[in-house]
Image 1 (tube, rainbow, N blue to C red):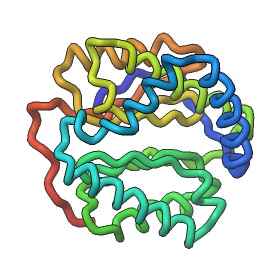
Image 2: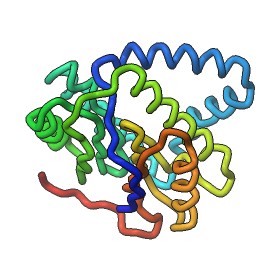
Image 3: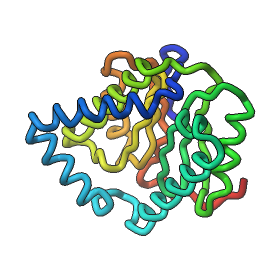
Image 4: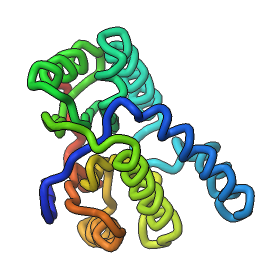
Length: 215
């Protein structure tokens, strides 16, 4: 794991849906003024699976895993669901977020392992209080900034990366073409305002693919 530390981070809590709606409206307004962004969004939606390093079948499987995990979290506890972030790549599941207790942390991970197809669980959940709407809005802004920078960097296959930001900490997941590409991704992340840490769970393209593992 590649990790660049600045200081400890804290994440937002139950106001996630409200803040997300506010930010979504803002993003739509910006997008309406930016034809380039609209074009990139449409292209990414239509061709993302074909452009990724992982086979299309695995991408579909990852989507099913993600939906199943979110369903289990939602049925368990709405507040818990709202506090957690999720990235899935090749059956590797990265879980982020801030929860009020160690019991919540364990519950979230236990439910992930119940889903068929999960090969590895990376637990980056912290037990801490959230920073509310302002903290969540900042984290969404950071993730959006990084995704934009990766998309427009022609030396990076941005479609192979997923980004989660929690309390100013950026968590990266996916497949890098080589170390030079990953270094460029991390470099972009460190240049964004309010970023406190960058934690990478990205594997190299030539590394062995993850295999199924038991909980």
